[in-house]
Image (cartoon, rainbow, N blue to C red; front, side, top):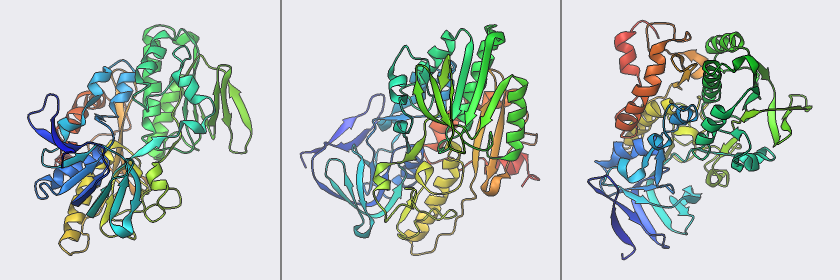
Length: 432
């Protein structure tokens, strides 16, 4: 076991066990694949009961609070405030293997890592997220990597700071914001950065010589009608032009090319371009037809989050096929349901907990206000507060800037936050 050793993580009081990348075989009671919000939450929920019998497989040393990327792109937060070293937030009793899943063999209860290691498990939770598929847009990577090209995205930590530089350096002209027909993570983030940029340019008194366009590949500006009506009204009142059925397919210095629903193409010139890249399942899931559906997402039951073919496998977060909006807020109730149902299965019982599809999107609309979209499956409204959350309010901005990051770092990733259900029942008992 010379390849196994302890490393004291910076600014921590405990050591997290991790492994050098040597080809070995490991066994565990529970394997958590993915160290994002969902993976960390589940790891904490089982760490005490499965002490020294739980392995996390995660290739990244850094854990990002992704909702902060919008704040970084708008100059509200510094990039260093959006992440922490992964060992700082992991329970000390688990084993972290610093590698990524290369292939799944669920019929053998085994995962093969990129380095060639084999990990055998009794139970597995998959929380690998999704990836930005930049290559689906011709020229996008080159534009993002060119510091002189005014193209950026807040959907990656690599380009958040560039977004803020582009917004600050914008002198007027055409500002173009996009969202793809193949969406993934929270669609609200694409509009948040647009509204914040508009508010910044208004304060800088250049809004009079600025045209803002929002091109989305979807048929509506937001998936839930109540909030879509509010967002559309707000956009029009601020001179923002939304175009539907317009999917970005190419970026060049001359313009951005979009494909319409009928296959026609149209080019838009731009002085600033913010892109929401197309997103796709992780390669390790796409390659495993036993675990994934035809689209490449983990094939779990939408209510229990248990895999449809392998009862000892559960999933949560962006990698699953569940039809909820893929937001950080969805992870809280999902991790609770996975915990309850996995404990049931470990005890020889049928899963008893149900996920109702809860997701939330705190949509910041200026540097002072925002609205809060909350909903469950079938686009049913599921609001927490006893006021209309589709109206701009100062409290929503404050919640997004201060309260949600605190909950994330101190409760959600530590498996202590199941969502706002209890708060809703106390302050808003009649709204169901």
